Image (cartoon, rainbow, N blue to C red):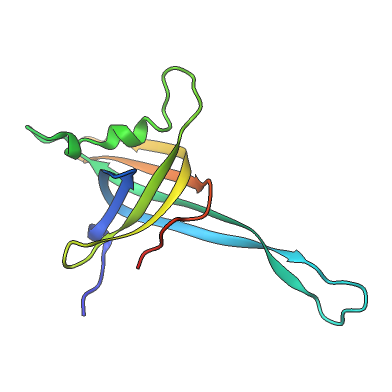
Length: 143
């Protein structure tokens, strides 16, 4: 039996793999609505508004002779960091892993990138922390 690790991480914006993902996480939560009425002996609850938020730690490089697919961090950065004052885009973001047979197992959702914190240290790989909030329900969940 094999286990998945952070080395198996994957992040895509649309269909473009944007960077190497070292860690990622997301949290799905749901509010509860109290629908207890006069005469009920027990509190009655139903599910309310759902939300999903998450983050990822990514790193990337541009090797000598790198192809466009190996330098796609700019695709992710361009969704939040705007030079012309326009609003941030919603993006289709997929987070997941590649299994032992290199099959992608992804959770996909439309999100708003809420923050990107970049770090560049001498002798280290360029990295960033990315945070997001889902704009709607996920369209796929890791299978």
